[in-house]
Amino acid sequence: MKIYIVDIETSPNLAYVWGLWKQNVLPNQMVTPSVIMSYAAKRLGYKKTYYRDNRGGMKRMLKGIWKILDDADIVVGHNSDKFDIKLINAAFARHGMKPPSPYLQIDTLKEAKKKFRFARNSLAHIAEDLGVRKKSKHAKFPGMTLWLECLMGNEGAWEEMKQYNIEDVLVTEEVYLVLRPWMSNHPNVADADGTVACPKCGSHNIEYRGYYTSRAGITYRRFRCKDCGGWGRVAMTDKETLKRLGRNV
Ligand SMILES: [Zn+2]
Image 1 (spheres, rainbow, N blue to C red):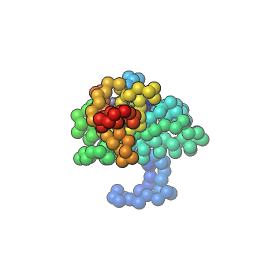
Image 2: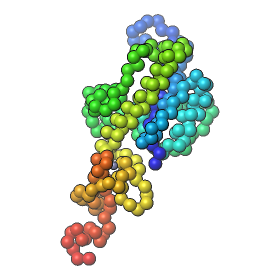
Image 3: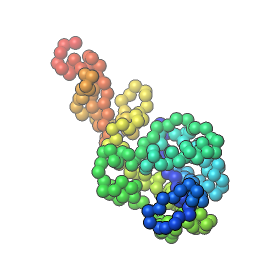
Image 4: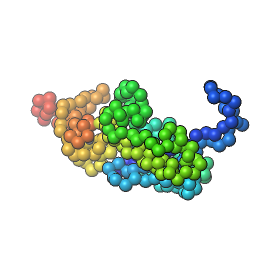
């Protein structure tokens, strides 16, 4: 299973506004709508990072993202279900591109909300709370200056954007790895080769711990992954179930 962590950076909308407080911006006040400025990605467990920005052309950048999504079996991102993937899809469609091959999505924001109650659910806050890799602050171009300077073609700002975008992917990867054993509907990544392996990380380093009987009455042996800490189960045959119950077979 090829798992990619993906993150995009977008430009702010540019519009004419009458004031600074609680503005309702009508479509004819819009000058330039938000676009994807860059993307960064990385395959889980691999060192290489991918990055491209739109300075070489929007289509060229989109082709880069498309190739990654097309290669992926699973795409991981923070708020990627509602934000990144939908913006990417819209950009693909706008540029006459066809969908990449289907992939599953894991949104660390959704998972964080489902199973935990963090004080705040931003990537930066969750990463800090969990004590994983710290999300970098763009130091040279703080706050929105980074985006504005990029839009004005500042080479140094683009360099910082690159670092920032890649850093977000690395932080997302680490947050994902902490949340993964807790996810209850994580796609099964174990090889379908007949062996018993962890459904979350594919490891064979497991220990059996107890049993589980489903509402449908099927009994499973439960196991815990000694690598990622996730739980899995394997259905018992009728013979195994009867043996466990002490019946003669
Ligand atoms: Zn595991």
